[in-house]
Image (cartoon, rainbow, N blue to C red; front, top):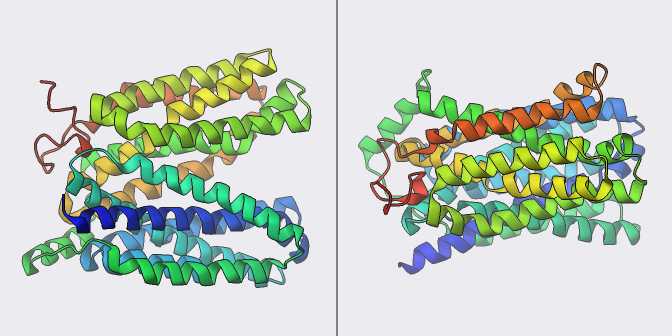
Length: 401
């Protein structure tokens, strides 16, 4: 295996970890910044939509640009935008300036997200085996590290501007130093012209639309865990606050561990099996959590939900990137963009429904979405643009007929 490919893989790990760390540092500082700016939870909720809107715009723009100029340009550029924008929320003095800061941070995050996932597809194609889930696991580890570092700097009394500015500077330096290790994609003028044409197309391939729909459903389910797992234990089971917080911790830990293990499972059984049985496992876990009258069983259910979901989204991103090598980033941006909207839609969908039915009953909606995703897992089977025999491309293993 070429040394450049191994080095490129480690560089991809660095950018995934950096993205998780940068965005995790923002999350850790949300309460402090909210208090400093002088806004309530309701206003913050609306402003967070700007973070999502910026991310969606960044994803849609970065996809075609990454295909046109290559990952060596797109990935460090996205890292620079995301890192530089991190300091802006720490400098905000009111809701308007905070809204603008979140729009810029979301845009940088969206650009980096698509560019690094597209580069991960290139690395995975070189390895000819599944490696995508491990990258996503490192993103989660970066977020966990941010929680530890942020808690320490807040304990020292550092201001948000100082902390976020320092992290942003570290991010800029890391991206600059790591950029030369990224893979160089050699392409002909004809390939570049084809990519430019693809980027201008308004008709999206049916398979990409299907992958994007699955991403929307599954990331909505992930968003439900982020926003409602703790509230479910507290409101439905009357758990103490400290115990209720374990629900999200169980989900997030299981998600990270699952992603560290998924690549081996995908290499042995294929991406279709990962999505089918993973989404089915997630449905069983969330149903158990939602319907359980006992706190311990509910905690186990949330953990099983995380294990089941852990490998699903990386398979969708990988399949989108491999569907057409000349439009890998564009297709990843389509799938990731709609999936991100699904994650944002979680609170908007679940919240109003809790006025009509108990939260435990409303949680059966994401259970149904997971079951639907499991039934539709066959969409991951090898497409016409993928090299034959590559399990990384979403095909079943070569040993299967």
